[in-house]
Image (cartoon, rainbow over all chains, first blue to last red):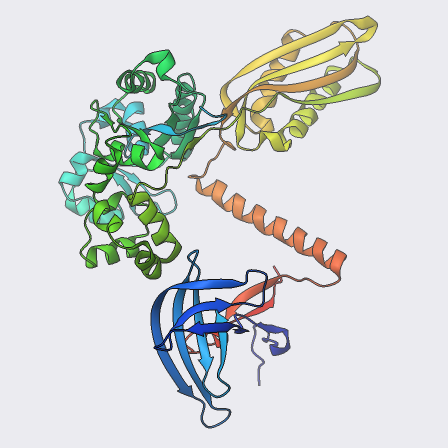
Length: 96
Length: 404
């Protein structure tokens, strides 16, 4: 069999991008984020707008993923996605 | 005027500048339907004259479609260098009125007007002086910040400038169509679909809602529409003279040797980082001769240049006519006056674009090699799509080592 002409993609050279980072989230009475606290020096930031909310239940056939996502605009205009891992009840943050 | 910036601006706009430049070069074209071909793809129309547009010829059409609509259409091969030269000359003329001139694109420039009232009087008079200096049919708008001046220029008619005073500014902006905003076509379409028509409609929305929908671009658009962003005109200081010199180990009288040295010194001076963005207008060659005498020639180039092949020949002609009277101990090439522009071929010339791309790739390869040598590994990565459709953001893209 003739090997493919292009250089094979080496998976060991791939690095994950946009990994979720742990974040503390304050919620209002309806469970919507109002403030986040990052580990970084930037510290505490208020949530200015909740743009969208959705839920993902997936991969039940291996390690199940149950997440509640909330896309928000933070003070200063940063656009981020927060999600609550519904298995561990931890919150994470990543880029949309 | 604070240094090289000015809060108040006059926007000078010549729509379809390349086509106007062609008509100025060939007056017989003025009363014919004409169209310019796209520099990157000469099978398509770039710009069409009003006569051609009246017959349905639009930018983006193929040549066969355009001829089908208008059989008498005169097609013109683009000459980007000529348009660029013409625009550079216009900018030079504007610098006689104000030291703060900022080109935006071919045919559009901002002139800083803070402080000019002391020289010329009212804004109306300042605008008149700019119109007289630039010459030809053009649209002029006066206002605080580049955006207000630009919107005013888009509403102005040739010979009838629009002046928007600071007091009128908010009211003026409010009633202007959204098309004036520098947004990409998709966002313009979305704004229309939301039923927004004027800058006032956009400014009336909460800023956070606009940011949530349109991100950073939306934020800038909202601030412009609300009159909260005044971008000042920023001029550039002209570079100081650039000198490249050489001391000979022993005096040289051979003209061939002198000519060669002048060429090498020109190249050396052209590579000076201060020259970036400027073309050379005036060149001097100085020499210290034996027994304390000196020699000097000065050439003002007919067209500003940034290539050795264009600067060297007039100096050689001068050298032949009036050679040094003795052996030369040291020689210096000095660029003393400059005109805007980076090269003989500018942004709009496809050869320049290709050369720039090739140059960037070469520079990138060099930088990667340097990083590898220093850090023993590349540390540079490229983003690749892994599962762009995934509902989990962290699965969509990954980094892979960058190897140019």
